[in-house]
Structure formats: C-alpha cells, structure tokens
Length: 106
Image 1 (cartoon, rainbow, N blue to C red):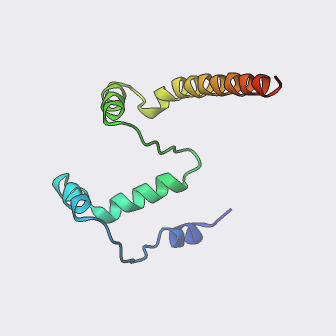
Image 2 (cartoon, rainbow, N blue to C red; image 1 turned 30 degrees about the vertical axis):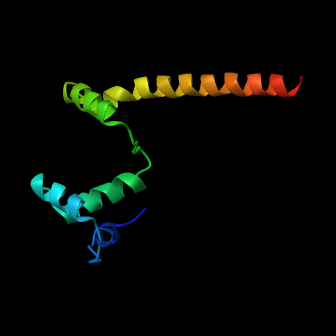
C-alpha cells in the first residue's frame, strides 16, 4: 500500500503539449470548461476500473441526461438496468450463434 508521500507524488502534474481541433476548444470555452481539468478527468475515467465510456446517438444522450438528472444517485441507479440490457444483448448473440452453428451443420 502506498504511503501518503507516494500518493501525493502520483498527483503531481506534468505539463504536456496537446493538440485539439479549434471547434473542440471553442465548445469547451463556450461551456467555460478548463481544458486541462477536462482532459485529466477524461483520462481518469478511461483508466478507472469502474467507469464505462459509451458512444451513443444524440437522442440517447439527451434521454440519458434527462433520466440521470432526476435520479437521486445518478449513474449508480442505472447500473441494474445496464446489467439487464447487457444480459439481453448476450442472450441475443448466443441465439444468433446457436442458429449459425445449426445452419453450418446442415
């Protein structure tokens, strides 16, 4: 287990040059988002063992934002529904693979 000094060292900042598109920069500025903090948060999310990053349609994002905004625990409330959706997706794939296996055997 890392001691406090090692943990503090892990949080030291490193300056890097980052290239982003102008439209990305402008959108972040319009939202008054600190680019460095935003990038650090995105990296933390990507490296996290408990965060998922999903690319979805605009409509799905709007629906997500509406539902999560009224959810007392945010994303935590969504987890059982996500697990059920993943189970359903897996069931669908299993059935498709079984049908493919059956078709190949003909």
